[in-house]
Image 1: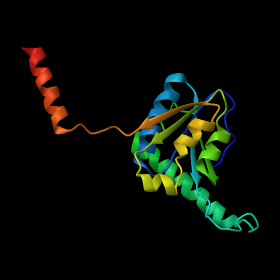
Image 2: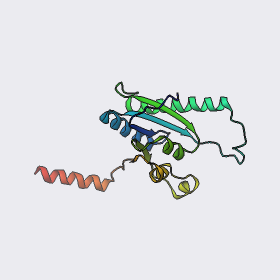
Image 3: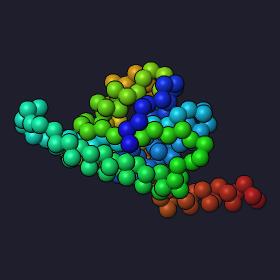
Image 4: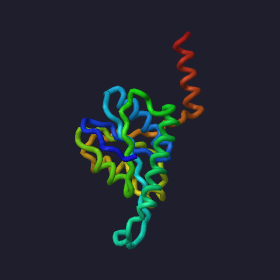
Length: 170
């Protein structure tokens, strides 16, 4: 459901299937509620790579199917992160087809806050598929917030923390 986008300052968050995007969505929900800003949840489906894609006609039915899938993905992300869309949140869902970085940069204005998840990727993965978060950080006029996945503490870190707590209680 691609509605008209709100006019004032907005929190724009990129939503996909990744765990990092879930953390970014949680951060964006909190930021939008705290600042009383509208939240724009954006899912961009990558366009199929075809050497003559500019000359091929766009299949309208396929585009509608992709928009429905994108809207379902965003709804599922809100359900997982916040148990649904919070009542006090002004939400707009935007779906696009193409390169995610390009569309997110085009949507985010200078007065907006652009929130993206940043996951740890292998060198091969970075070579095959460029980083959307790095593209946005380089090209966006908006303030960009990159939310990383939390790191699980190692056993050694946990043991050190336990010993610190014991020392302070003695």
